[in-house]
Length: 204
Image (tube, rainbow, N blue to C red; front, side, top):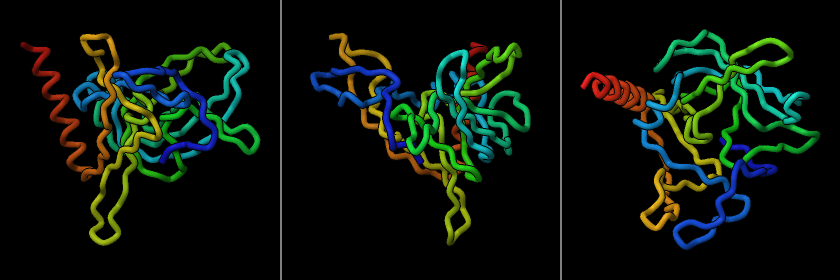
């Protein structure tokens, strides 16, 4: 699920491949699974706990903090309980969030591609995590009511995707992000295979 009530663009690119993106668009480089695995410091399957918003007086920004209970580590060493931090939050009756930012709901099961963020806050150094490449770094886990099989679903959350590298003419080329819904076991197997490929490449 994605936050869609009040949009603030994370960054704007107004023209690509001869066509403009809408002014409210968030434009992200679309990364294949190998790139997502390589660039993430932690990949896990877990369950969402408390979701809360707080204003950071030092940075003068509104953040959302998401507690995650780790159920399975797919890459990296991580504690049993971690906190995600993303630029977003609730102000009165409005949600303020960049387009393309994933929404978290207490109790949902998720697969996350994360990066560590060491932050000094109120004199103490703390480690938060952020979802890598915004919407592309979160899969919601759904259970088939008839079979009990678990599926992982990716949603672009309103973001436009472009190829990671500009064309020879220097233009960004739009790509259609695939609507991904696949068995959870298959996603986890693909993540493991991508890690194996990356490790094998390091040894060559």
